[in-house]
Length: 361
Ligand code: NAD
Image (spheres, rainbow, N blue to C red):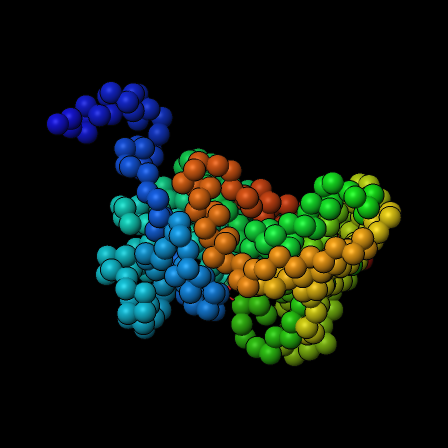
């Protein structure tokens, strides 16, 4: 039987070892799995209520490990999901995932200001990375995350679940194929009433403010509907609860201008429930409401088309499609570059709030 060195030699991997890190080599010598193991980093609301339950319904990936800073959660998760002791990590020993063949993907579901650290450390383990939206608070962070994944030859996907939803894909298709001509006016809104007072969403250092959460859905709606990148923005931040929103905005209104001349009026808030997208084209219109729910997004178009592809829950589809892209070595549907595009606009939005004027992007 061939030993590992003979195998490496016969496949030319010894020469490659001068170029690639040990985990790249190790991966290259392992058989391709058909179901990838995921470790969730951060066991808050989204992991607990949405992603872990979704991973019970997926075909191409499954929950295999957790990374948590809260020891009291370990037993609960182990019992609920049958996790092995060796697949439980904390934020300090997290890097040892590099040696764990059960884990193929690290899914970072922490407050936005922590995404960069855990994506960069995660990429260094040689595991593929999923990271929640918004990608990070700054373009520099996003770029560092992309660079780390490229350097370690791992995939990076941002958790923009709506881009996996056939209902929102219809919006993208209309922008691309232009059956009603060019988009002229877009209205995109995403918000909910958040009653919490000391959550990361109210904390600047942790990446809070409505643009660190719902704001990117309003922005994504506008960008998907326009089918192009905005060239300028004017924005206004406000709050109706200054006792809670001391360091970050509760509400952001922003107006985008696109190269084709289309304009988008966008609003996002932690003070009111709203979720819709309206697009007026040269010769027709499209409406979605809701536009960024976890499921059951629906709408209509001026030619009588009803947009209502049945999808009760986006997350299993997102997880399976992203896992399959890794298995089949295909590009990710929502790569890091797409997360960065939003943050470039978010930075311009904050600049405009500060200056009070139009900011070129
Ligand atoms: P959460 O507050 O419920 O959970 C955050 C987790 O991070 C907790 O487990 C907490 O213990 C941990 N954590 C570690 N260090 C922390 C610190 N210093 N401060 C606060 N928490 C700390 O938040 P969430 O709603 O689960 O959001 C997490 C990420 O998921 C965010 O990026 C958010 O935007 C994203 N999210 C995405 C969706 C979606 O639909 N794609 C929905 C909800 C949240």
